[in-house]
Image (cartoon, rainbow, N blue to C red; front, side, top):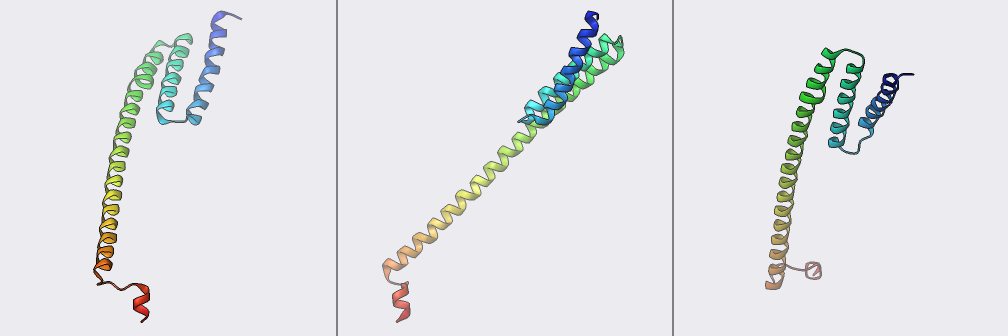
Length: 123
């Protein structure tokens, strides 16, 4: 076996590991990074297979443009998630303040004697 054949086998094994790793990554950022590695390995394999035109295309499109688009998409998703989380927090705070005001109004009315308790209603 020549050194190039050993390199090809190792790279093919790494390629399979990357393909599986993308599916089992814990986060989207991890999946994008593994995808970038996959494209880089494919680029090296194309060079070893003496196909420089495909290697350049893989490097430019696979590891380059696609990865940048994935990163921009991730950033936009996180920004949207943060915005939605802030809106939910504001709504929760507003609801809590509303409930606090209603409870305070009931207690004030009870203290003033305008609202009857359960015992007085029975009479």
